[in-house]
Amino acid sequence: MGVDTIGGVRFPVVLFDLDGTVVDSGAIILASMRHAAREVLGIEPPDEELMATVGGPGLEAQMRALAPDRVEELVTVYRAHNEPLHDALVCCEGIDDVLVQLKDEGRRLGIVTAKRRVTVELAFASVPLGHLFEVVVGGDETQRHKPHPEPLLLAAKRMGVDPDECAYVGDSPFDVRSAKAAGMHAVAVTWGGIHDREKLEREEPDAIVDTAEELLNVL
Image 1: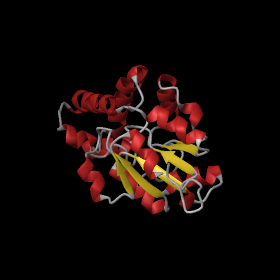
Image 2 (image 1 turned 60 degrees about the horizontal axis):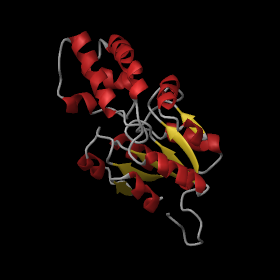
Image 3 (image 1 turned 120 degrees about the horizontal axis):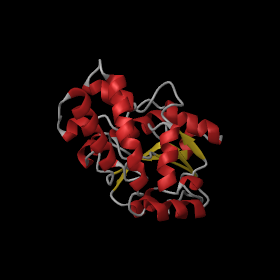
Image 4 (image 1 turned 180 degrees about the horizontal axis):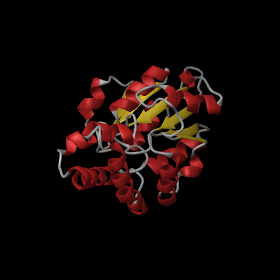
């Protein structure tokens, strides 16, 4: 357990990204990105191109990178394919036990995600961890999105805490940038399968971990 010099927890509030951090959704995101690109545009871009903006400013921004003039159609086709896949969603390995342990230590937990709130609820219907989180900030609740700090700062405001009391845990470069911009402790995780470790290291997070259990040592 991370501790400060007076024996308490370093970060009483721990905020988490959702996709690739708490829920193992990289494969279904990729499948739906491939489907939308193929059905709407008749193309099959490289996986790296399809996933490059995942975890950032949201689904519309991801589709704008593919085809600026077909965003609405791409989003519609993506969601029709993606939402039913949430039925088979599972949590990332070991994260459920770590979340429970953090709660047992007295931490307050929250989710800050690019997903819309309705899609967050779909995820937590399959992965019943939603009760552990005091606050959820969805991508449809702020004007500006990661890597801008606004979503993280909204979570801190709702919880009545200062940003420097918070750590933010995520699997994308956008998560690290957002945490730094918000004045929060930035923890990058490598298990999401969406962004590789090298990309995360370039953002110089405060910590980078490869397993859920390692989180307990950096928080």
